[in-house]
Image 1 (tube, rainbow, N blue to C red):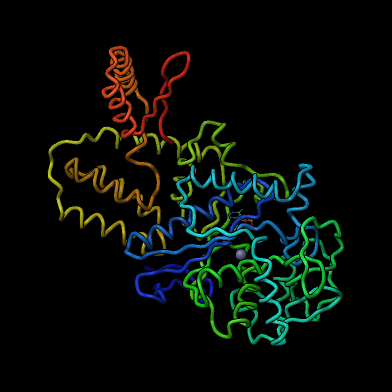
Image 2 (spheres, rainbow, N blue to C red):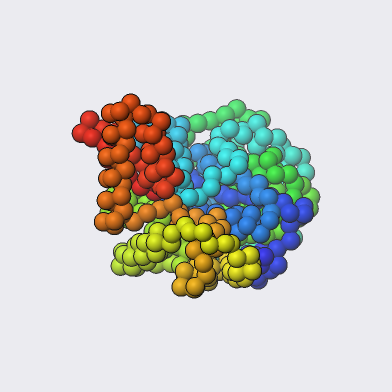
Length: 464
Ligand code: AMP
Ligand code: ZN
């Protein structure tokens, strides 16, 4: 398996620390608003990475944080806490909006077939651990107290910039979106580990600490959560490209100073999704959500396919005409797969091997999802026997996550068939043959069709 490692700045062969097992950390959402479809692109590509690793035989342990405190509206540690801003916008308590938007994010992940990580931790649940971590950094002279806050001293590091490609000044310009500087810092790049003083004093959540009542800086949660749940050595750390600096740069600085050795071997950063007019961002309030796409009639999996058609290292521009074309492609794909009937054909092991190898090679080659899709199209066009085709489609869908087998396109023939089954079930119930009625319902469910009994009669829906 090879993919682009931001740390070495090249495509590298992946070697896990422990044989056949991968420790993976993904930066989670800041839950002050809905996730936008740009955020979700990042999570889709991280899901593809995880599922590819599983497909080729690794066990993956994935941990994710939920940022519910400390992420200020400027990544450079100035500005107001995004959570406080969100709470004010909605006239609610911080923890209420955190809960609400975390649930909504989980719902989006479910709809997009993004596997929920094995461990998900709220930033606010780890305060004692942050305090211990910061105390250790102060004891070892990596951190200092100034103007009431605790800062990390970046001048103590030999190479603070090892994750980034740019010069110090261009990076600082990039984060300085409100051009205010913090005079408490010894070096421009120092960052806050613990706040007790900020220009914005209305922080809702504060905790006691050896440095006074306050709250943690943004970067600390990921370092401490990763250390607690995955140990001192990490295989892969993920996040969108905007996380490279300062967030991941600062995570590396503080974690490696704390553990005293290299921390994470591979850094995976999918590129952004942009709108035709520029960046899609939560803070500007101008963004597209998955729910909006659903309202407009697009299945979430059409959006997943839209993302898989392009490479994760390329910026992707969102446009409705491209999404329309993808919807067409998806419907055709499902229709075509629907038409492959189970028959008594025998699984062809050799053919399975040939197609699996091609599919695996596409993904192992820096996650080339569009080539992986080509393998699927080639299979559909081929004269491979039906059961072998169905077997391979199911197999590929473990990674693609497009519900290729269970999804149905309702054409006239399918509609007639479902209505007939509803009729038969109605008759069965009338004759008190409940076993048969249940069997009809369950058989339909196996095919991805859900029946709903309403006062007006029975209706049906497709699963996803
Ligand atoms: P946030 O909720 O802002 O902390 O971001 C959640 C994830 O989405 C992070 O991994 C970000 O790097 C990523 N992200 C932010 N904006 C975009 C975008 N326009 N396209 C793709 N990923 C993004
Ligand atoms: Zn993080």
